[in-house]
Image (cartoon, rainbow, N blue to C red; front, side, top):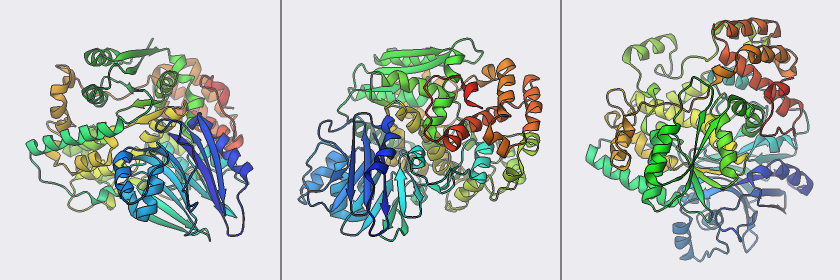
Length: 606
């Protein structure tokens, strides 16, 4: 796992090593073990390395023996062993033990046709000297991040937005429509980010940039190509068994020890069972709960799973101040605004694991792949009413998360008048699905191309990489994604309970009764913290924040705080304003500012 950055300049210009170094410094947390720069012609590449495979030989950027190709890569190509065996037959012999070198050789042999051959999570920049082009690529599901920006004389790219801010010639500007998306839907989605000009490389795509800085998009994978299948229970169970074990065998490839984030849920328990079955041994596992709160936690269930599989378990029982002291640092880690409260305990888990390990397994993706969320199978009446009130997406992802009275009273004019539809990414995803798909498949797909890469995986990558930890997510092996999406609805949900096939397959592997437990999300006791004196102080300080004054009607904030104190809602809105205020200070007012892991969030608002 690593950080990558660089740029391609207009013909005749040469890259500046000092700018590459400036970008690399902003990515040092992603790669604390090594770093390197490479300049050739108009292209400059930088990489900061977290050494996991090929520890002694995997220095990057990598250059082919003939100098025709140069690569900076982030992530893992899990099937590098199989690919290298095939490439050797064509005369391409690896010089290192790094899985990333496989990208270099596969491209040399197959060109862009190498992309469907890669299995893993990755983002890379590849300079093809002979073709005078730079290729920016991202894995199929968007597990690894990659951003780019067009400047007057170059196109620059980086694993994180903060590295691009290091070379912007002017103060960053906020995109109103993306900000409104964050407020209403917890995250902003699509190619545009919250910062004007900075874009995401879409999952499953490569950008091909020529010497005139023209960009061509090449999409090498899409879940839209998945066809619904008529498949029976026995055949589906056998296929699932083979895929789960195949994915785990490849994900276990590592030259360093690994651990597991263990909740009390189905997905992490399945990973624990598979790790045990594949001989991982007494690995370290980590779970989280809370002290002094009314919110139930899953420490006991996680401990039972750990004991059953003989794991070296580390439960964290957190005080509220520990959790919410993570707010500034988690915002810095994420780059992008997202109101996923689970980022806070994930940050604490990452720091704890990172003191001992470089790699942890995590269960992200199980719900999206096997239809675990209740929102994928709503009651008919609920679906009908929502479709009637908010047409265009089958009653899915319809409602904004800010109460109308607060968006009306708090949004400033620029925010109210921002062009574009808040639900545009969901509407687009829904519209592009095939007619042969069921509504459940459309709901899965909509999340796979919006909430998954632009919210859930931001947490899974950025919170962990903030402490130099690689997160591995076997449920997002693209073969499993294609399988889960293709299944008939009846194998996904029965009696309004999701992940039916996965549960049935996993039942013999897990302790008796574990699958009888009702699903709980990774909850955080925000309501126990953001009230009383804390809510009052947040409201008072928001009025002094430059970004809040620019985008919101600050005279209404006291009403919001009063409603919160009286139990009349306002919690999401107040938390969102606080997040924006801190984000604006870190990324707009003072780019380069870096909070410590534990800070008083109130001190970062003004």
